[in-house]
Image (cartoon, rainbow, N blue to C red; front, side):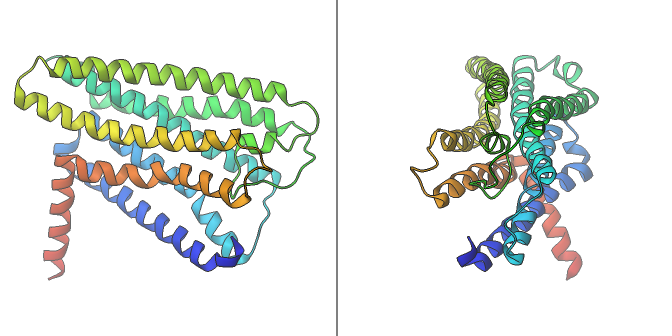
Length: 295
């Protein structure tokens, strides 16, 4: 990336600043507007805050490295970045699962919903989400930390666990098997819950009034768009592990991973900021107040 380092660093900085601004705006609007103090918006805030968390573990360092010409990172620094990036992915999956369950309760149990999903309970879900994500990621990253490494070159612009395992001396099958089984169980469990909740919700939508159905479907489409974006991005990253390092160029590896990581980070806040009507209206009003105040 050194040949066009100023262009790439400018793009990375622009994406980072834009993403942080949009995410902060959404969180600020939800925080300051009492009418948005509902579980659904708490979960949306958690999703976009996770986007801020994910982009902060990757883009600032990439920008600094490009401008300084640095191509190295310490092993401990690599482990920390790997831990945070995998935590971002785990939090994303858990959040989409919680949001699917929340929408199922909202549509399927409208009268009991205020009791079933309070703001306090939603915050507890968010806390459990983050703690669980850190725990499930801590184990495989810690196992990697004890591996003796022979290689020094990562075919990537950021650190993640699989790339580190490939640098290990000798047999790393235990790490590979544990990581694969853990990821498979988590992803399949969450995917089954999400699919079940959305199917049940759509079935319920067919039985309720037309107006209520349109409102519920609009919300579900927003969630499905964000979730589909994340799944497609994850597929790109998983595809990279199937590619032989010698069969494709380093640029291809970098392109696949950067697109896979950056897509959900940048798209999610845009989707929720535009598709969620109540949130969009409040954001526009905030801008109008700011403009009138300046005038």
